Image (cartoon, rainbow, N blue to C red; front, side, top):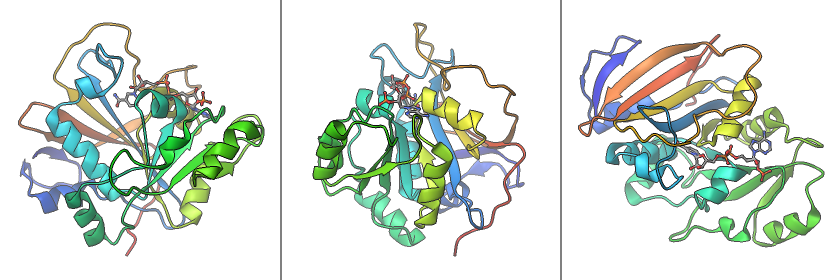
Length: 262
Ligand SMILES: NC(=O)c1ccc[n+]([C@@H]2O[C@H](COP(=O)([O-])OP(=O)(O)OC[C@H]3O[C@@H](n4cnc5c(N)ncnc54)[C@H](OP(=O)(O)O)[C@@H]3O)[C@@H](O)[C@H]2O)c1
């Protein structure tokens, strides 16, 4: 991976794996969560390819980048829609990801947190397709139907009921930070991303620019009502991979003060 720009002044050039981890490591605020969102989009702005999923537009380097961010977070946060359409299950990791986590002092696996008002999820989400996998939490409302929650609980899923008619997203993030999981990686989708931005809860936006044009009706990285105010961003770094994917990281303004967890 080649560093093109780092606003902290790191000279441009090829990064070693250790330098890439250093760049991507989560900054952690003293008593708060850090929420990073991660999307891949084509040059014409679509977050899906012809198969209505993101895998077909994700270059090989993006798949590694996606996996590295999973290796560095405490929890993967995903919307019910994306969890259903992309077939999410408890997060399992490759040996190299577990090595990164061990070196960083993180728990062996990140928690998967699914945000859903309907709680319309298959209980098999509790376990990964292969391997061991981390815990799964469903974040929903106090009005979610028991008939849907009971099978999830029976499968070993923790159910958080925060908010009456709508999921209280701020309370979800606070809950995770409060249990020692402040490094939060939101993998979408666009409706959840829009809501998190509208509430001022996103600290960092990652966008992989895939070197493709696909046309079609694909969503942007946000979907839903326009924001009352645009969210202004500051470019943090830009990476280039051999397969011509570009990786950008933006911080939302004003920036949250951060330190690092020891
Ligand atoms: N390219 C990429 O990087 C990328 C990343 C992620 C997703 N995607 C694509 O995005 C598409 C899915 O998008 P989508 O329109 O289904 O949007 P989405 O944001 O993935 O899912 C919307 C659903 O998530 C739940 N949800 C979202 N925000 C919520 C909130 N504030 N409170 C409670 N529940 C909330 C609701 O689920 P319930 O209906 O269960 O209540 C809602 O119906 C897929 O095609 C996927 O491939 C692409």
